[in-house]
Image 1 (cartoon, rainbow, N blue to C red):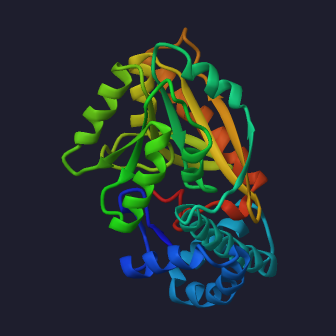
Image 2 (image 1 turned 180 degrees about the vertical axis):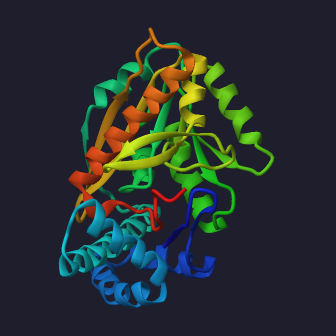
Length: 297
């Protein structure tokens, strides 16, 4: 499973040794994915016991943010961990050339911007399975530049590159030297698409405080500032699992009143994204994959 720890401790690395991941891809080539889901169901309770801190964070999430009782909260934590395991398995199933079905809502927003001469920023988040968007929501007219964690395993990076290459996509690694910021700005300057997380603070400590599930949460200022300063459109994309082999992609436009000052537009864009993110999490509560107190400062 991915290690999603905290705002300043973002790992993003998929658990498991490279040889285990390579073996998993080989297994998927000859095995029905539902068998792997069944096996995952037996593993989840042990994972919950081993990662007690993450379990408590999710338990409190359901108790406080949704008002569930103890039993319902525990059951939803289990379903959340199971869904997360399935999402990870789906990624490796794609590497093994398994085919998934996609329903796209709001795809015309992406298609319209992809045909324009200017670039745009596409916001991801740690819900659902955003990586799947790279296999379905693509543009052959513009290069797609996706920010990815530089410490990911070689197996995952190699397979991602192989799958993304036919879709005119480039991975930009997050580095401590902040070189990825220059690469992103260059891509926007060239009229390309830039994909960055809109729900994690990494690199820069700057943030925007937004109302999120009835409390104040901090969202990174960087992605919104990058779009507003370059005056390019913003989209939010959520890829949610709806069946064994099916996903639904939601494309949402993030607006900020042009009459506002630059700072106010950045804040408005961040708050618009937070609102869209909350709506999708309320619709798919067990696909919220932030295993820490998101509201802790």
